[in-house]
Image 1 (tube, rainbow, N blue to C red):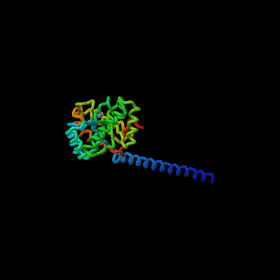
Image 2 (image 1 turned 180 degrees about the horizontal axis):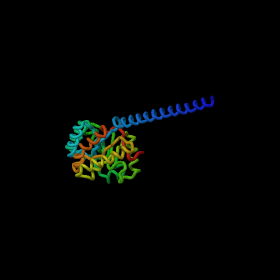
Image 3 (image 1 turned 45 degrees about the horizontal axis):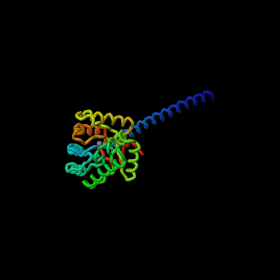
Image 4 (image 1 turned 135 degrees about the vertical axis):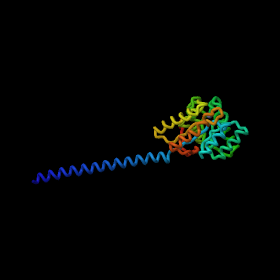
Length: 257
Ligand SMILES: [Zn+2]
């Protein structure tokens, strides 16, 4: 009789523990799902930032770009190039007045000169900086190497030594992680868009939600302006919001020191 009672108690205990284990299992599963939902919601709603950047302007395209950005109430970053003349100077001022970020690219934009020595690079850099300062009163803190810091013209040692010197002076170089390749597809806005989306998807697959988009402000690259509204719409549909680049942004650097 006692043996039978013990047997029943033992079997009941097994059932009770099985029931508890499955309750705990389903509770944990549900909670995990919940927290995963929260993570993806957070990423989609708060942490997706697109930094639109335009190199090589100001140009006869600048006003078109400014109009499009204004329509969407977006602030972007312009990596500008000299030389100084009235139209360019007026456009520099317009970029600032519209609330965008001015950044240094190059005064001459002549690869063979600027990458021939550190001294020549810095001469050109400060010429560009002083021009911006004189025309707008602004001293930009961000710069972009022509061709990016990973360009194939300059040696890595030269780039690193320039970065180091300018770092010490408080300047920050910025590259990109979304390439529209707009330099190569002059009359095909749809390609500018699809190139950007391909880059962006690759970044998102690597859980990278800060997109620095490389484009050009150049009258000879009309596809950029033509593609810009659809690119903005696409980014908005992916829940990105737009910010100009500052020293405290999530800055992409192809070469670090
Ligand atoms: Zn350039």
